Length: 179
Length: 108
Image 1 (cartoon, each protein chain N blue to C red):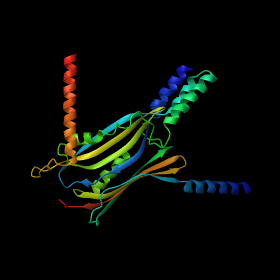
Image 2 (tube, rainbow over the protein chains, first blue to last red):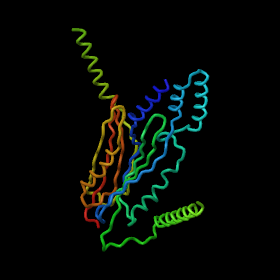
Image 3 (cartoon, chains in turn blue, orange):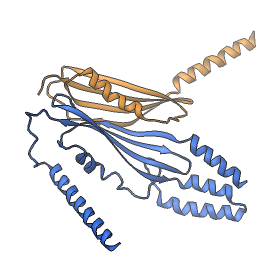
Image 4 (cartoon, rainbow over the protein chains, first blue to last red):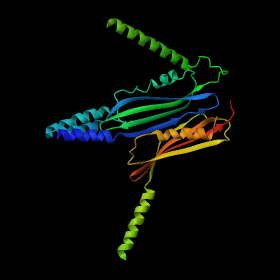
């Protein structure tokens, strides 16, 4: 019985990995200011569906009492996941925060255009990949064009990134010394 | 004869139902800064059909931007309104991305 459940779970995991698109947005496109280099970034978190997990657990439970306990646990957890949501609930809500700094880092000229944002999901039984994908173009200005002065809010973010990077390097060095 | 008439009625009823049951929803809308000059309109629509909503890639949506860029070569496209919509027809879903903007060539 367990082998059958495992096998069917494996088959369904392989076959039913469904891609859902929740939101799509696009920014202005500037094609006249220089050569465009495409950028593709993606961040994701694991989503977890308690209803589906409980259904699978119930299949494995042999006794009525066991199934009842699973239902009770499911109901308690469901109370913490109450309300409207996009996709399956994740364990963290800040997984997409670093997209902004990643975008800035991946464009040396700091001029981005044609930004597309996709909120999507790779859906599997019980779990899912909750994904935010950003595609953009980095404008590589012609040699005579000047790169804007670093006085925009992006500057502070890029500074923050540098300070974070320095911190990471320092931490690595400390870790290596300790080892 | 009577049974043939009944069958035709059922067939017509199913056909009408299939045509009219289509249920639409707007999943997302976004608008960018609208320019002063709005003469040259460029728009595009891309879509994909899915059985029971099951699909394995969302890359169809990305074609909207490349289609827009093709319609305004080397120009700037601003004031873009993008909508992402779904239309349900019983077991089939039509996922549609529409984008409309204003092309300005030689604004450098």
